[in-house]
Each structure stands twice: as structure tokens, then as C-alpha cells.
Image 1 (spheres, rainbow, N blue to C red):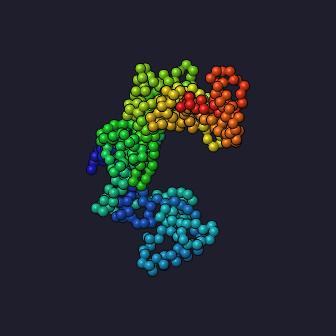
Image 2: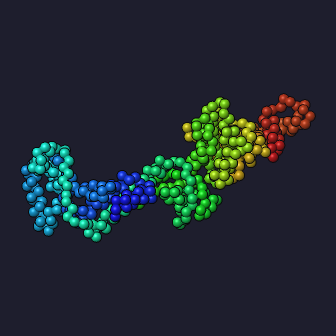
Image 3: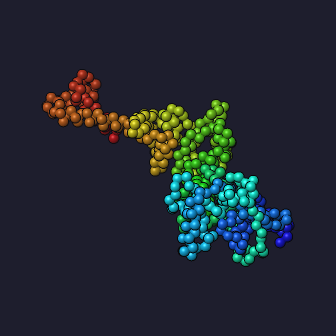
Length: 452
């Protein structure tokens, strides 16, 4: 293979795998080192190669680091170790260190690896200028051409290293995109999982991250929230989602420039994926209308967001520091009459009163509106109507009267007469000053009847 052919092959690999020329060159050098060890080297050599692309030549070196001399008893221990290995039928090259990790050695002793290290006294024999910490590169001669097995070894090393480098690049690329919205195409299904093609990688969308009413047909192009990017032994593992609340936030940021710049802030999001979402926003600039900015001219911005979420309804709620006003806004489109807060260490409860014709609107279909409003505001909401409130008061008054009867305060004929007089007084408005007990009972009954 000529010089130009080698360079062309390396450039093609770089383009196809999106790798740097330096990383490919390093991979080739590692492969050549493996091939040399296969045919001509031994295990006590630390083989390093240098490949010259322009000249097409390979240089092979044995690289070692100069370390301090070992004590004499280390030498004795080495001889004993060699004797043991020879008795076991092992060759000298199998000795990787003078002392194994399991051997007990005195404090101050250290491990010595003859493959990568050389003692100072041995280095001085080569050249007296060597000091501890120096790197000695001894050039080795290549006795001949590499054999078939060595070439096969080099090929496997190149394939493996290039694959590892490609996986690492993909992991680093998508790790920076973690927590963002990405565009993807539905590739196929594997069981209940949906595989999504993100370009250079394939992500998995498990069942719990899928919206029930959505149909993920092969070839459909959608936006996904890149939830998790992990590195595994089989390469980068990507997990995407369509149900996360963060996908709503990121799409708002991409479609509304004021949110991306920070002029408008998304305070909280409550979502039932595929059905409805409530988004609480606030303006950090008094000159900007937050709701109008999110809706856009003739609803262009909000319609784009709804389209990206496959028709999911979006309620834009104006955030307020006052929890009463915030709860009132969150229950939109229902109109609220009053809000009473009951906060304790255990829970935050808000009793919301609405008119009769607004009750179903405030609760929503299947309780969806009040459920989303509760999650959006962080308050537990109890919705009651005006008539329900009056009925509750009537029941309390009736219970007071019944308690009086049980106490024997309205059982005598005098009490019965007082009830009769109280009824006459209610008809002709003449008897005003009558006993309170009978009046309470009569009034309670009338109020209960009216409520019914």
C-alpha cells in the first residue's frame, strides 16, 4: 500500500467514524505494537511503536522507567519465586513482578515491574547519565515481516480501539445534551420499548416514558427529552422521554425567546402527559406581558408548542407571590369567589369557594383541573360551591337544635308551646321576643328546607 493510499484510508476512517486523525494514528501504533509482541516480542518488553504516515515506516521501542535499586533480599526473594515457577513448569517470562500482591513484605518494600521499570544500576550500565525517573527508549529491530496471525491481531486491535473511541465520542457528545430536548425518528419497537434514532446513536424509550394515547409509528419524527446518558460496557446508553414535565419547559424555551433570555421565568409546571398541562410564568421585566409573549401573535407560539406535544392542551397561568391570587389563577378558567387558607406543619390546605355554575369547571373532567392546580401551586385544594357552604351552615345550626332536644331542653309542653308561638310569630311578625331555643330549632328547619 503506497503512502497516498495509507493517508487516504486514514482520512476515510476519520470521516466515517467522526474521529480525529491523531486518535486513528494512535490506534494504528497500538495495533502494530500488538503485532510485534505476537511474532517477535516477549512479556517483559514494554513495546511502543511510532508510525510515520508520510514515509510509511514503523519504529519499535522497548520503553522503561528508571527506578531506585532494590534491596538484596529482594533478589533472594526473586530467585525463590523463579524456582517455584520453574518447578511448576512456568517460564521466566511469566514472572511479572518480584513480589506478588498476596506476599507479605516488610514496610518500605515496594513492587517492581520488570516490564516497565529498570533498576538504576542496570541503567548505569547502559549509560552513566541516566537518573531515577528517566525514560529509556531502546529501539528494537523488526526481524522480518509480520505473519498472518500478527496481522489478524493488529486488525482486531484496530477495530476494537476505533469502536471504543467512537463510543467515547458519542457518549461525550450526548452527555453535554443530557437534560435537553432532541429531535429523533422512531426506528422500531423491541417488545414494549421504542427505539429512537438520534443520528449518531439510538436511544431507548421504555413504556413508563411513553404517552398512552400517542402512536409511535416507524418513521415518525418527534421531539424527545434526553433524560439519562450512561456509559456501559456495550457503549453509551441513552434514555429518552415524552412524559417528562421538562420537555414542556424546554419546548417553551425554544419557542419563546423571552423565556430563553430570562425576561420571563417558568415558575412551575403541572402535567398530565397527552391531556393537559398548566404552566405558571412570571415576568422579570415590567414592560413585558408574560402571557401575551407565550401565546404569540394570533396564538402562533402556543399553537407550535401544542403541535410539538401532539395536541396536548396548555394553560398558561400567571404566577403570583400571594398564594390566594396564585390559586385563583391556577383554577382558570373557573371563576373563584373566595379562598381560605389553612396551613399547618402536616399540610397546606386551601378551601376554595365558587359559584354553582363554576363548580364543574373548577373541578374539571375527572378532577383534572383541580388536580393540576393543586400540583402547580403546592396546596391541597378543597372546592365547594356557595350553596354547599350555606348548606353546611344550616346543618351546623340544625345540629345545635338537636343537641338541645337531647339535653331535655325542648321536651316539656311549655317548649312545644314555644315552638308553636315561634311559628305564629314567623307568620304575622308580632311575636319577636320568644325563647331562643325554640326559635333556633324552627329557623334551622326552615334553612334546611330552603337548602333542599
